[in-house]
Length: 261
Ligand code: 5RP
Image (cartoon, rainbow, N blue to C red; front, side, top):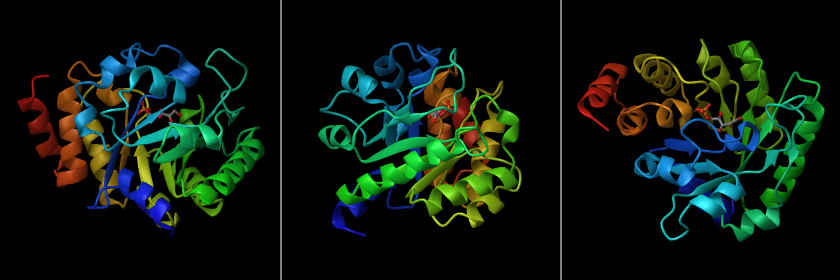
């Protein structure tokens, strides 16, 4: 691995081999999502618990302070919306030149395996990897399912992660599922657990993140379960303890209960 690639990977994955990514990219297809209407305000109290922000160039330029930022994973796929035809019909929205200009640590793109747009999104991943490898920029592939959340089982997700890694992704972000070890074991690059819609209570979140880490995930990319929670700092702190301090779900829950914000 060349120095630039190594350095960028080290920016997003900490020396203990773990990472806590904070996604605030939801507006790229959802518009002004609840509690993310003003992304700069949303992240202020929780940014200290993030190892990297997953964000589009528009929000990066308008809401993130360049003098005091965490490493950036730039979302470079899109072109669809929640009111449009099909969320899977994504393409590459942002050039490699723009990623370099913004001095990003990595880029992220969604693939929609099993959808009508499987081929298109996988070819986009291949193209993006070709360009990014030339400049030492890691690509994070996101195994997306659009509105079909029921697809998320170990058989499907292990297929998706393996394909994304085969096409050159340096990191793969995927959903947690039962038998998550099958997903991690079949994937030759690091796997990061995605969040998904907000849970009604905290403990199930701590449990699936803990299980994912125990089964080999290196961290999370988790947004709504933190910043849509009435106590986002408590959620961020508790999750940080699971990822970086090997806390159990019960210990994380104690940290949550002790934190008022
Ligand atoms: C959308 C994404 C988002 O980054 C992702 O949804 C993570 O956030 P959350 O935990 O809120 O689901 O990749 O495809």
